[in-house]
Image (tube, rainbow, N blue to C red):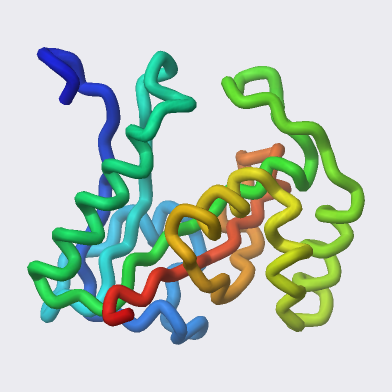
Length: 169
C-alpha cells in the first residue's frame, strides 16, 4: 500500500512440494495457480506478482519480494518458487505494457532446451530481461523449462522457466 492505494500484490500458496521434483511439478499455470495449501510449508509457489503501471520502474517489486522472503523465513519454508515469463522468445504483444523485442538467440536457447532437456547456461537464459531481473534481484536458480505452461502467452511461446530461491542460504 502507498497511502490508500494498492500499489502491488503477490499471490502465492504454501505447499509441501519440492520444486526440484519435475515429475510432480504442476504442468500448467492453471494447475500451478490453483494448488491447495498443504503443509508443512516447504515451498511458497508464487503465481502472480502485479504492480500498478505507475509503480513499475520503482523498487516496489523488490520490496514485495523481500516481504515474501521474510514471510517464508517465518513459516519455515525452504523455497520461494516462481514461473518466469520469457517475452524475448517471440517479443511483446500489443496488449503487454513492457515492450520486449524478439531475441532469436534466446528463442534458439529455449527451443534447444525443450528439444534436448539439457539446461542451458545462466548467461543464455538471462538474455531475457524478465529472467535477468529475477536472477539479479533474487539470486535464483533456474530449475526446469515448462512447455505449454500458459499456451495463450504468445510472447513466451507458452513456455515458463521455473526458478527457485533457497531461503536457507
